[in-house]
Image (cartoon, rainbow, N blue to C red; front, side, top):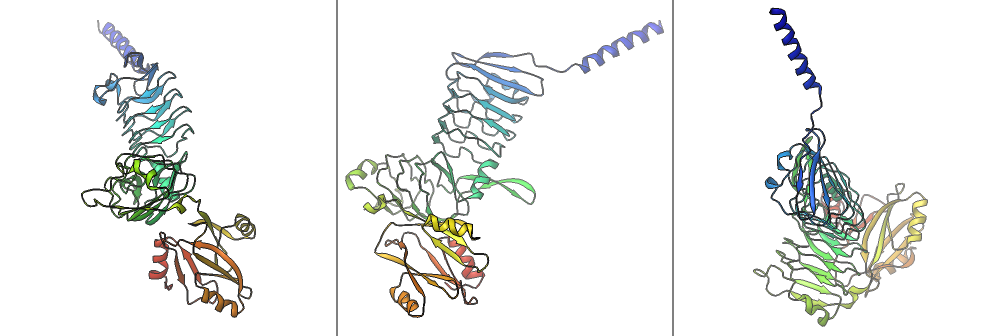
Length: 443
């Protein structure tokens, strides 16, 4: 009897071990989530793939009521098959274990907060065909890279807020531009924002100080509001077509904005919460009329903003390039691409675009050269130019034109400790402040 008991226990233990050694699989649950859309989960229980198939749009669900909500902590992959045309708002929000999502090219739009809160989502594959990425659709996702198809043409407010990808973009340059759409600006940008040429759309929230970014402090991951500093002036480029809803939301320090002729749409509440008091518009009063009811500058504080009609805004500005000579310490500024490229080949360091200048104005900036020291000097004062010529400097003509409206300050600093190459020119107020208040340069 004892042997039989032992044999029975051994058999039971063997069965249990066999069960434990078998991989755990889901029961292959599936169902409908729209008139012509179905869903299914498959794979190991701890690594499920949620697949949407069919045609058209899936239904709208609050996350806790989605038909796959039972598996929401086990879903690590989402596949949206060809035939689906839209991802509904909130559809995959809060799938905390989600690591990868692949969206077919038939999907034209991803709805508001569709993937919000998927903090472990590291890989997103989008295909050509996607047109719209709505408000916060990838909010708080974990990816540091994403390839956005060229078909994407509309981005909502905070589409990529709280993602490492957006943070890196905001820190790498002053403007985050995707497919000719400005979607965010750097958190360090202050004073004047000159939106680069080629931008066709100012997306929702792009210039709002409340745009968010991912930050790391003291080795720990943290989150903070990452909007720009204090922007007081915005100059929009010739060729701009659209200013989307809430594009300037909350710009409490904005004093004025330049809008070029040819603008086709200014979205409702584009300037909500802004205290801007003056608009320079490149078109006529008649052309402005359709926008007069949609441009709303926080009317509780600013019922009467002024529109100044200025046809010169339709001209494409001149790009001023900035270079640095590591041997002499000189900063050099030119609008000529051939001169820029020649100096780069000669060992000068190209530091990017310094600013944008008008094509012409009543205020020329004279450029002079000292053949003895190898130094260049720039001035708007004819008397200063003539005095330097009298001292042996070479007159190199007009380097560029200054804006007669003085819309963008160009700061000039002087270093009295240097005998040559002792002037610096910049539109960056932070650079100007650092040189004059911390490093001893004279304003």
